[in-house]
Image (cartoon, rainbow, N blue to C red; front, side, top):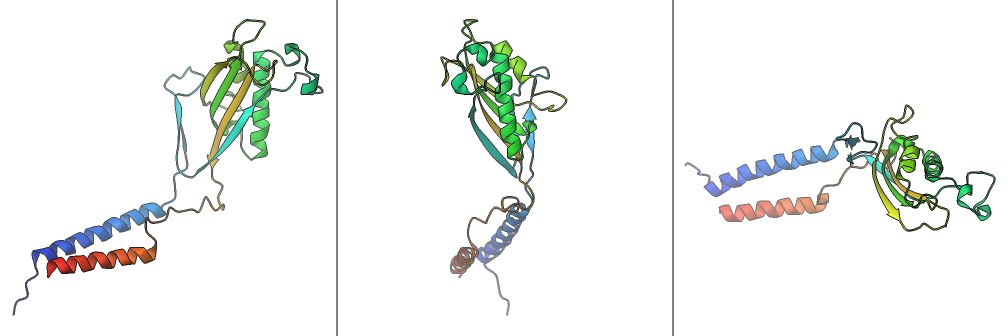
Length: 216
């Protein structure tokens, strides 16, 4: 007696094998360690900022609130500031603000080279009657593209009518990224399968039952 296998059963068998292989490949990819990297995109080698930044998996982000400069004289408090001379010009205020960002980063285990994005809000210098963009860039160059920090960042700059105080000329927001340290829960995290094991088993059984009913 010869037993014939119906075309429907043969097709289901081939489909099941393909499904199993595809699922195995997907699980291997999910279990593979994430590639942690930062890609800095710069089309003009002479530019002081980037075109953009791509962030790979396995990275953690640090978002800094807008930071403002401190008085030129560190012994002075903001309550003692009476004039723009107490705060300095746009270059001095940019340096002061970036130094403040540097301190915040280092307190969290980051460095200036981990910065990937800055947003600058710049007010006009009343003594010039306009925004001192050249002064801002001069201060910026002391922190980026240097021997200490060869990296630079993606950056946006907005001219604003004013900041929170009459003698502030700049405020800077920042975003930094770094590789997730080994041993942290985030570092060992693996993306779960779309369905938990119990539901995957039910789904597979239902799939086989449906195939058997079509093949009979």
